[in-house]
Length: 215
Image (tube, rainbow, N blue to C red):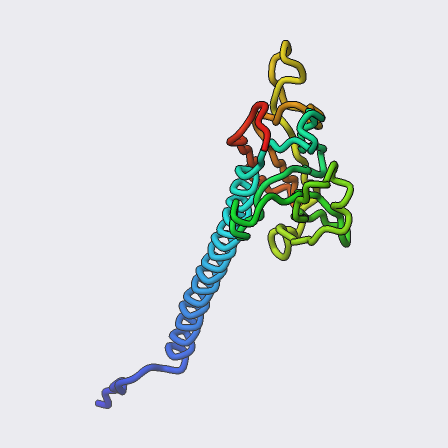
């Protein structure tokens, strides 16, 4: 009697099934790997973007902390060298990284400019001379772009606000302009609106010096 014995090994069907399962496992593994890489990249981009925003905000905060309540000469003019609008702040202070008080006062402007349908924030600086009576000379001042590249990309709107009392008798509140020629605002706010709808944390800076000081 012939007895059929099955030889050791896999049949063609078993081999095909095994290859199919192996392909499915590899596909799942590589799919998970790609997802992990994308998640890592997204987290890395968000982390880098957050770091750039913190550097940018830190610079703005330090710069506004250097606002000085300077009065135009002659001293009896009683006119404070500070003007605030939704798109620009004119003030007197010290140039960041420029030696501070050793190099004297500068006329400074934080201004919102539009270029290629994108708003950007620039710092303008001009050495203050005793003959200076207003901010009209800022048109030809040296300019430094603060919000550029990935920080400025997609920025739809940059708006300054000012917190303080309009008169000595009124309660302080947020204002779109600051025209008081005697006092600085208590707070300055920078609001950023992104075209993507992403929230940018509101930046509020308390000015270190307020009141009726003179150089």
